Length: 514
Image 1 (cartoon, rainbow, N blue to C red):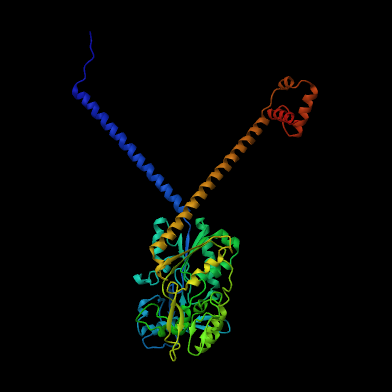
Image 2 (cartoon, rainbow, N blue to C red; image 1 turned 30 degrees about the vertical axis):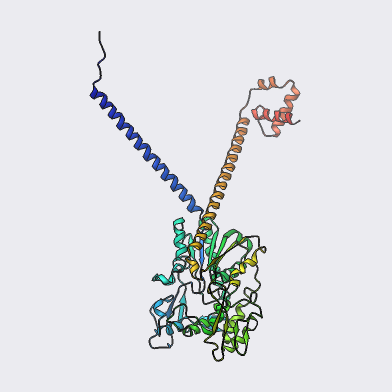
């Protein structure tokens, strides 16, 4: 009698080892497959999110754009000044040009010349300028091309957007302009800006967020009021204003009288005053008569007081006839303006000492005022920053307002709470876009399914008309000759074979209706 051989202990152990190895191999394969699937899903979610982010266009304020220059001057004001350059150089912002003595050359190259006949400005003779970086973001992230830390501008906001999927020059773009000039001289810039917004919208398929700073706010208010409402509805997602000078600033009055040292303590305000007075944008930024009335004294002297009602007298006293003409050119550009017709997020600082009035003792006018301070962000007065609240109820789009205590005019561009607000807004719009994309995809799927169902029905009808039954089948269906002949006649009228299945179906449908 034969018996089955018994397995040895070593054989059993060997088989168990093989089984264990196979199990480990299968586990490893399953683990790596899960990891790959998870990676693919994360990648797909990231791609979906990046396709849904709203593109951003950054609009700088006064002093917020780089300016390059090339010289071929007939004369210079100082022997250390360059008369001719071989190529372009950085005129603004170039910290090396803002040092004592050299700054005289800078002032002479930066100032504009007003033409009373054309009511426009030109560069000083022999000076050619250009604004670099339109459409990119780098020249509004840093004002000094060398990226020296004090000259950072929109950089912190852009750095916060990049981790969300934004790409410089693609989904976050800059629209710098010659900040020396007011809106009435920026026709070409506004045309380029409109094209930039349209191209960005078309290439990414999403409406655009405009982020504005300082003078960029009234510039964009003017621009948006020139656009058709249907264009704004199609292309603009929302506007975020940071320290917007919606109604001008009393500080502009101080610049005309005493100048401003640009925050550089080694520079005399009087040294740069000539350049500042030559800029039409300064006239544009004078306090609006919509917000400051004739009883709001802006400049007080022993012999006369000045308000928005008698700026002409002020310019006459200062012997600045061209500046007054620039004021006439710009004062009504935003006079009682309509609401912009877009959603607005109005963010600004408050609780920082801001020029409210200039008081002059005898013999001190115009160089040495005593400054009376009021509320604002150090540059823009509170009533100007809050002008956006006037639009509540005057447009269907919402207006959001948020002040930040103790945040000054430039600090708002790097304040963590302000940046968090912008990031959260972008993320909420991204989520909304993703939901809309999902709903659109579902609708397209439903439409495609309906189309396919109708196509199947059409194919069935076509085939049913092609299937011809024997004559004797119809003889069995119809009880008498008259019914059969009527069916044959109806079929010919409908261009169907009289003995087809479709003809029979049509006949049944007719009977059902009756």
